[in-house]
Length: 101
Image (cartoon, rainbow, N blue to C red):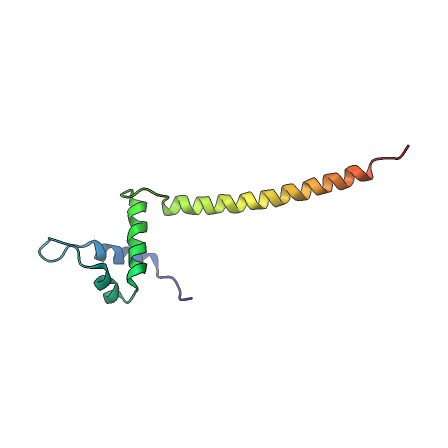
């Protein structure tokens, strides 16, 4: 898998894609901008969509919120595993402490 492009490159690519033509009438096609930069147009479209969400122009989770969600889900999995281990240890020691009459 190729290395990801640096954030500065992504930011500048989105800026270029959102620039109007010389007349100021319309945007340059995304496919042309992507070809000029040597990236796929789907990649550039994803960056544009992500930038729109991050800036609040479109609804959705921002990059920061998405990162926080990933971290919270990871932490939840760790806590669930730790909880299961504690339950099993508790059951083991409870069986061990029961004395027959």
